Amino acid sequence: MAALIKGLKFAAQISNRNPALLYMSVRNHGWNKDFKPGKFPETEKERELAAKKYGLTPAEYQPYPDDGLGYGDYPKLPDTPVEARDPYYPYDFPELKRNLHDTLHAETDFWSEDRFGTSDPLRYSMKTYWLAFLGVMTGCFALYYWLEDYKMFRPVLAKQYPYEGKQHYTFDAKK
Image 1 (cartoon, rainbow, N blue to C red):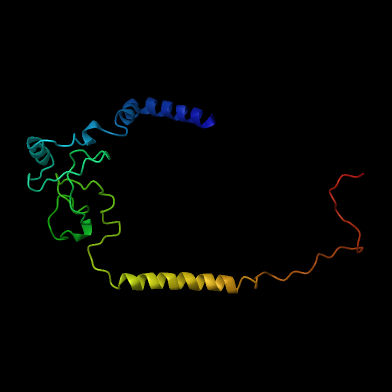
Image 2 (cartoon, rainbow, N blue to C red):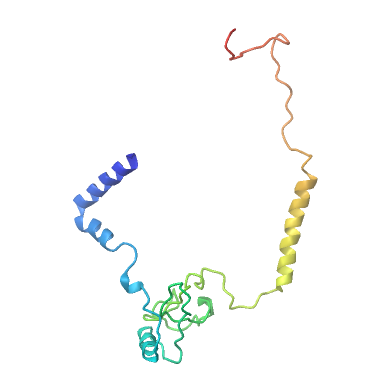
């Protein structure tokens, strides 16, 4: 409840300073109808219109199969990572390596440069990577299992109280 009150007070502060800010944030939130792909193309004419919409030739355009996942008329682009593109090409957005009206891949977050790419061949075989991983994990598990009985702690003597056997500072209720 306190968070709700604070949120309402904060909204009132924002609307007093700049009322357009609150209205714009509500109006522009979330999904935009322009982001939604069109209906899956059934005829050849619809395919040509969809290809033109995404800036592709009809020969290049191939939509995702209509399996109910909601890709609609969005084109199925090749799975090539961004790092495989030419770094010296004069892109409109060089930090993203793309031009202004380039169609984005449907899974563009998988293929961006900050993700693992498959454009370069592996340095070693996959078998070598798996053997290294399993060797390290087996070694860690073996050390843990072998050293489980050897606990590391500071040696401490038993607490020493005066008058051996007498209870000191008990917080139990008196009977």
